[in-house]
Image (cartoon, rainbow, N blue to C red; front, side):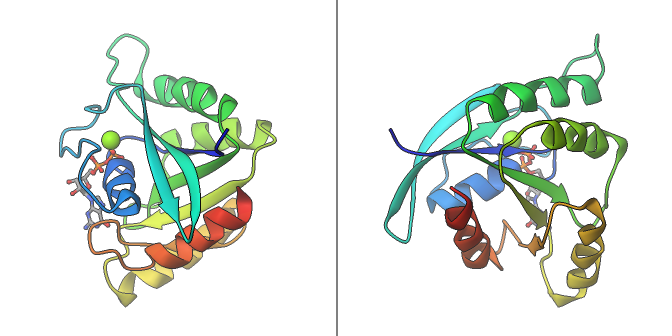
Length: 162
Ligand code: GDP
Ligand code: MG
């Protein structure tokens, strides 16, 4: 019974890229077109000697109900089965209305939340990441899923929450 970490966030923030970074291999489907990942995919992950399940979420391209609703709904299911939640936002974009929908779901849950401020590819992005303290989710962890910048510190925070 390994602990489960759910990776949630709106489409295109880099969840699958971050999952691949954590796995150290390319398994999660990364796409420039949002909504490619199936609803929930489990991966066996390990960091600093701790094994855990990593759940990538996505696949919420839905023209009928609207994207914010689908993201919130999917997050609810993922959070339900998780011991901790990795909330990924795009630090270069900041908080959108879809992120805010997700925030409501996260606040309702009693799971620990680790905030990843992704796409901080260089130190210039640190300021945008620091602005995310406003969310009230604790320390925003700046990370570049593509380059690996900050991923070790992020994973240390994840393990502390699991
Ligand atoms: P998901 O929809 O949240 O799973 O996002 P993906 O992992 O599929 O990534 C969406 C897009 O963002 C792709 O074009 C990625 O290459 C890009 N991306 C992901 N992480 C980073 C990052 O750290 N820096 C930059 N510059 N782009 C990123
Ligand atoms: Mg994805």
